Image (cartoon, rainbow, N blue to C red; front, side, top):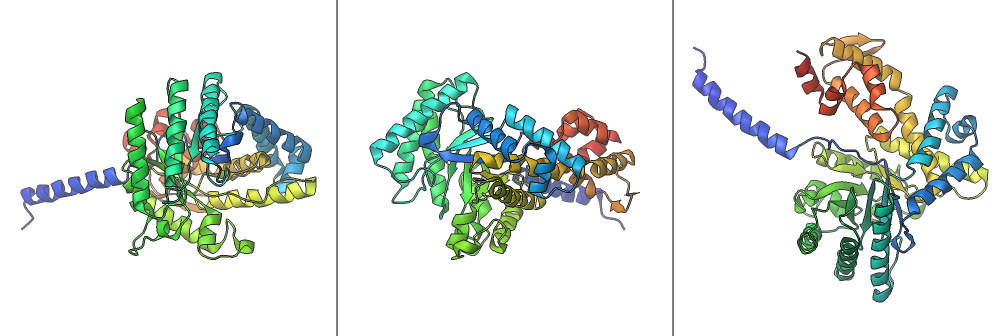
Amino acid sequence: MTVSQETIDAWGRRLDAVSARIARAFPGERPERQPVHTVYGGAHLFAADTAPKLGALAKRALEEHAPDPRTLADALGMASTDLAEQVYARVAEKLDREPVEDYRLDFEDGYGNRPDSEEDGHAASSAREVARGLAEGTLPPFIGIRVKPLTGELGRRAIRTLDIFLTTLADEAEALPDGFCVTLPKIQDKEQVQVLDEVLSELESKLGLSQIPIELMLETPQMVVDRDGLSGPIRYVEAARDRVRGVHFGTYDYTASLSITAAHQSMTHPACDFARQLMQVNLAGTGVWLSDGATNVMPVGDTSTVHGAWRLHYSHVRHSLLHAIYQGWDLHPAQLPSRYAAVYSFFLEGLDQAGERLANFVEQAAKATLVGEVFDDAATGQGLLNYFLRAINCGAIEEAEAVRRTGLTLEELATRSFVRIMEGRR
């Protein structure tokens, strides 16, 4: 005797509720663009034209230390001449058109502790520069400020700086810049995140502002595994309700908190890999952007020294990309050439094979198929689609090229879901 339809429907309703709960908890990747980096600089040094000036310095470093594709390839360790030419052209164009994707005015480590009157002045003056950059169209697509930690010692200073900055910016501009956010460092307790959420809610109400996203910096062991032994990152994200846009890994504060000596504090230290992987697993499917940290060896000096720093930075960025972290920090304009070279080469070098696999996979309507020596099953479809979505996001390819190589339409790419694409083609 088979189970009754009424019983099956009851189970089905329970599963519908489960699916809805999963969809709320795991909304998937944000459809909007994620920057490939965040450039940090002292708030006192920021001016309306900082981004184009950084671009000019980055372009000068490229022309001086890698005047042609072959030199850049040798400096970074790229084997393919054809790939080097493609990458070089894209890097040079990017430095002219949009050298900085995200910039953070820093009132923390890049600023230091100063008299209250001095920080008050810089909070107001930097906000006026942001307003001027907004009016003149010189701001990068994403921008924000990093305040001091919300500790008992520095919390009042951080809140005062945030208040002065946002109040001045609201007075000087009709609206906040698109992509604006506030970054919170050195978090040790979820209540620090809750306080920032409450402070921003109060300021938004007072100043008539829309909701301001925040970024959390994962720099302490407590954010990896909380004091009660449970995984930390998601709990800190939930403390700010739906306000958290991203979580950024702080390499050097995190390794220092584990008593790792300075000589071994590195982006590729196993302790960092553990923290990043837990961060990824904990926040997978939530739509929260993840960012890696910075390479602290600056490309400054003679060409040999610059090439060594570039190769290290290039390897660190590639390490992040290999582990599916598509954003990182940059601290110096001469790091921009190696940043974009690493990002573009990562996607361009696998473009032909990925395009062939995805086009063939879609054509076979998600049936398992063999292309060359790589066997694809249905679970691979989303991974191949993600490859092209990320390549478009970072500027390695245009949407039109993705359409040409994959056979997908722009509308299908916009769904960001291989399952939905297949359903639409049945």
